[in-house]
Length: 148
Image (cartoon, rainbow, N blue to C red; front, side):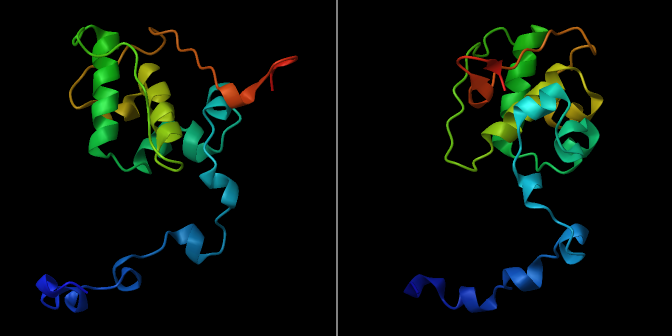
Protein backbone atom coordinates (compact mmCIF):
# COMPACT_ATOMS: atom_id res chain seq x y z
CA UNK A 1 0.00 0.00 0.00
CA UNK A 2 1.46 3.42 -0.91
CA UNK A 3 2.64 5.47 2.05
CA UNK A 4 0.69 8.57 0.96
CA UNK A 5 -2.66 6.85 1.55
CA UNK A 6 -2.25 7.43 5.29
CA UNK A 7 -4.64 4.67 6.24
CA UNK A 8 -7.47 5.92 4.00
CA UNK A 9 -8.06 2.43 2.63
CA UNK A 10 -8.86 1.00 6.05
CA UNK A 11 -11.41 3.78 6.63
CA UNK A 12 -13.35 2.95 3.45
CA UNK A 13 -16.37 0.68 3.49
CA UNK A 14 -16.14 -2.48 1.43
CA UNK A 15 -18.32 -2.99 -1.62
CA UNK A 16 -20.28 -5.63 0.31
CA UNK A 17 -21.08 -3.04 2.99
CA UNK A 18 -21.87 -0.26 0.50
CA UNK A 19 -23.88 -1.92 -2.28
CA UNK A 20 -27.22 -3.66 -2.07
CA UNK A 21 -27.91 -6.22 -4.81
CA UNK A 22 -30.93 -5.76 -7.03
CA UNK A 23 -34.09 -7.60 -5.91
CA UNK A 24 -33.86 -10.19 -8.72
CA UNK A 25 -30.34 -11.06 -7.57
CA UNK A 26 -31.50 -11.53 -3.99
CA UNK A 27 -34.41 -13.72 -5.18
CA UNK A 28 -32.06 -15.82 -7.34
CA UNK A 29 -33.97 -14.84 -10.51
CA UNK A 30 -31.21 -13.06 -12.44
CA UNK A 31 -30.69 -14.70 -15.83
CA UNK A 32 -27.33 -14.47 -17.59
CA UNK A 33 -28.95 -13.67 -20.94
CA UNK A 34 -30.10 -10.32 -19.55
CA UNK A 35 -26.48 -9.18 -19.81
CA UNK A 36 -26.28 -10.02 -23.51
CA UNK A 37 -27.63 -6.84 -25.06
CA UNK A 38 -28.35 -7.11 -28.78
CA UNK A 39 -29.14 -4.15 -31.00
CA UNK A 40 -30.50 -6.52 -33.64
CA UNK A 41 -32.94 -8.02 -31.15
CA UNK A 42 -34.09 -4.55 -30.06
CA UNK A 43 -34.68 -3.48 -33.68
CA UNK A 44 -36.55 -6.69 -34.57
CA UNK A 45 -38.65 -6.67 -31.38
CA UNK A 46 -37.10 -9.85 -29.94
CA UNK A 47 -35.09 -8.26 -27.10
CA UNK A 48 -35.60 -8.71 -23.39
CA UNK A 49 -37.81 -5.93 -21.93
CA UNK A 50 -34.83 -4.38 -20.14
CA UNK A 51 -33.52 -3.37 -23.59
CA UNK A 52 -36.70 -3.25 -25.71
CA UNK A 53 -38.81 -1.11 -23.39
CA UNK A 54 -37.29 2.38 -23.63
CA UNK A 55 -38.70 3.54 -20.27
CA UNK A 56 -37.16 0.58 -18.49
CA UNK A 57 -33.94 0.79 -20.52
CA UNK A 58 -33.29 4.42 -19.58
CA UNK A 59 -34.41 3.88 -15.98
CA UNK A 60 -31.83 1.09 -15.63
CA UNK A 61 -29.00 2.68 -17.64
CA UNK A 62 -26.54 4.88 -15.76
CA UNK A 63 -26.16 8.15 -17.70
CA UNK A 64 -22.37 8.44 -17.93
CA UNK A 65 -20.83 11.67 -19.17
CA UNK A 66 -19.76 9.89 -22.37
CA UNK A 67 -23.21 8.42 -23.04
CA UNK A 68 -24.88 11.79 -22.48
CA UNK A 69 -22.40 13.49 -24.83
CA UNK A 70 -22.95 10.84 -27.51
CA UNK A 71 -26.75 11.12 -27.36
CA UNK A 72 -26.59 14.94 -27.27
CA UNK A 73 -24.23 15.08 -30.26
CA UNK A 74 -26.20 12.63 -32.38
CA UNK A 75 -29.55 14.25 -31.58
CA UNK A 76 -28.06 17.68 -32.24
CA UNK A 77 -26.93 16.50 -35.65
CA UNK A 78 -30.34 14.90 -36.40
CA UNK A 79 -32.28 17.94 -35.22
CA UNK A 80 -30.02 20.36 -37.05
CA UNK A 81 -29.28 22.26 -33.83
CA UNK A 82 -25.62 21.20 -34.01
CA UNK A 83 -24.69 20.80 -37.69
CA UNK A 84 -21.00 20.79 -36.73
CA UNK A 85 -21.35 17.55 -34.76
CA UNK A 86 -19.57 14.63 -36.38
CA UNK A 87 -21.70 12.78 -38.92
CA UNK A 88 -19.62 9.62 -38.58
CA UNK A 89 -18.61 8.30 -35.17
CA UNK A 90 -16.26 5.53 -34.09
CA UNK A 91 -17.28 3.87 -30.83
CA UNK A 92 -14.10 2.40 -29.48
CA UNK A 93 -14.19 0.73 -26.09
CA UNK A 94 -12.94 -2.60 -24.78
CA UNK A 95 -15.26 -5.60 -24.49
CA UNK A 96 -17.99 -4.71 -22.02
CA UNK A 97 -17.36 -0.99 -22.43
CA UNK A 98 -20.93 -0.05 -23.36
CA UNK A 99 -20.92 0.15 -27.17
CA UNK A 100 -24.10 -1.90 -27.61
CA UNK A 101 -25.85 -0.08 -24.77
CA UNK A 102 -24.90 3.24 -26.39
CA UNK A 103 -26.31 2.09 -29.74
CA UNK A 104 -29.54 0.94 -28.09
CA UNK A 105 -29.80 4.35 -26.37
CA UNK A 106 -29.31 6.07 -29.73
CA UNK A 107 -31.91 3.80 -31.35
CA UNK A 108 -34.55 4.73 -28.76
CA UNK A 109 -33.54 8.42 -28.83
CA UNK A 110 -33.57 8.70 -32.63
CA UNK A 111 -37.03 7.16 -32.68
CA UNK A 112 -38.14 10.02 -30.41
CA UNK A 113 -38.93 8.02 -27.31
CA UNK A 114 -39.65 10.47 -24.45
CA UNK A 115 -37.60 8.43 -21.98
CA UNK A 116 -34.47 9.48 -23.91
CA UNK A 117 -34.87 13.06 -22.68
CA UNK A 118 -32.92 12.03 -19.58
CA UNK A 119 -29.79 11.76 -21.73
CA UNK A 120 -30.51 14.46 -24.30
CA UNK A 121 -29.30 17.37 -22.13
CA UNK A 122 -31.85 19.77 -23.56
CA UNK A 123 -31.42 18.81 -27.22
CA UNK A 124 -34.89 18.23 -28.67
CA UNK A 125 -35.89 14.69 -29.50
CA UNK A 126 -37.17 14.03 -32.99
CA UNK A 127 -40.93 13.63 -33.31
CA UNK A 128 -41.85 9.97 -33.06
CA UNK A 129 -41.61 8.49 -36.53
CA UNK A 130 -39.90 11.55 -38.03
CA UNK A 131 -36.51 9.87 -38.37
CA UNK A 132 -36.07 6.70 -40.40
CA UNK A 133 -33.80 4.51 -38.26
CA UNK A 134 -31.77 1.74 -39.85
CA UNK A 135 -29.50 -0.71 -38.05
CA UNK A 136 -26.99 -3.09 -39.54
CA UNK A 137 -25.45 -5.48 -37.05
CA UNK A 138 -22.53 -7.25 -38.68
CA UNK A 139 -22.61 -10.27 -36.36
CA UNK A 140 -26.20 -10.94 -37.43
CA UNK A 141 -25.42 -11.12 -41.12
CA UNK A 142 -24.96 -14.37 -43.00
CA UNK A 143 -23.07 -13.91 -46.31
CA UNK A 144 -25.23 -16.46 -48.09
CA UNK A 145 -28.61 -16.10 -46.37
CA UNK A 146 -28.73 -12.43 -45.37
CA UNK A 147 -29.99 -11.59 -41.92
CA UNK A 148 -29.88 -14.28 -39.26
